[in-house]
Image (cartoon, rainbow, N blue to C red):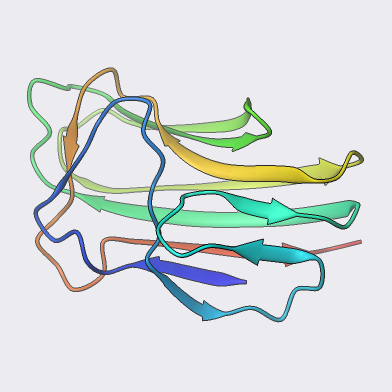
Length: 131
């Protein structure tokens, strides 16, 4: 599955909010679904999944450290940080799904509202089943 966010140029994301991916580019992964704009990927097939994501952000002052987490059913499994208030933040996670359904989300853990960059695509995520 490949998702992107294209409709939030210059928009903001509150602390604790999910990245509301608004475009499903591809979905060839069996047992995985996504409702556009929801921020929650539903995995209904047990297995091991690789998650890669990135987000483009503008000046996020007063936030000095940007932080986003890959969350599986409400538990953070990977967190990425960047110590400047703007730029691109990215992350990679391996998620073992043993209980279905499992929801996968990308969450703002920065401690304050952040601003998406004024670019064509503000965020992207790929999800691949490995086993």
